[in-house]
Length: 277
Image 1 (cartoon, helix red, strand yellow):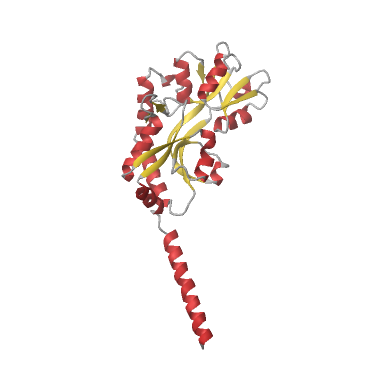
Image 2: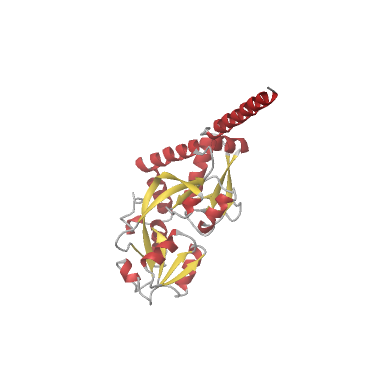
């Protein structure tokens, strides 16, 4: 009899624990609640990536296309924003280490998808381009796929994947950030830099090269990533709704164009881009 009672109590305890566990796992707002309780949204910023990220050297404050968007999400959550300096190549490691709550502007990447969740709603869709040195005017990716061609691409980024896939015969120079790529161009150590459309337009305007959209045109959906953890469904739903509104109402395009126009940058040099409006 006593054994039966113990068995019943043990089964009841296990059942209760399972119910508690299921209730916890079923809470779609767990991540949102954790961010609110912390009082801050941990959000990535990067040096050498203007106007995507702009750091005031005097105050240390961050502005730019991505910091502005991060502040919008922090405001929706009713929390402050905590900027975490990193690089595109280090994002996956930062997510795994728990240093970030989200990141805008990431590209589809199956390897990164093993450790983070993607919000399957692009903010805007751009195109991949190159900034070519004077006298070098390739029209296709095949024109770039030659041993004598030297291409700079950011290490660990989608740009590296594209360079190695579309131009495997070329000499690919991996750099940490865009500023280093520009130095390679200015030193005549590369013939082209692989870049997102607005960045290529920026260098075009500065006279550092010519913006070219090689064919076939490669699309560049601007996605959002969050850490893979239980209870992030509500946060992903918030970000999906925000992204859809940004894209369908032209808010993201207008925001990017505004920053470009303030710097005299004409996105019409990359007319295939959805960021041009």
